[in-house]
Image (cartoon, rainbow, N blue to C red; front, side, top):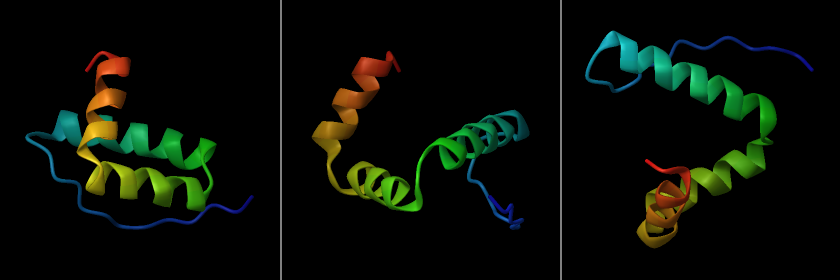
Length: 60
């Protein structure tokens, strides 16, 4: 698999949180397909009930 580099801006309260988010996004992008990430993003943006259930399941 090829690797591509991008410059992105991450909204965060501080640099530590931004780095935490980037590490998590890197793991997600390595384990999920583009289509799966799209569906995940759609669900988070448009289905607050499923998002709340997932957060509860994850303990966050």
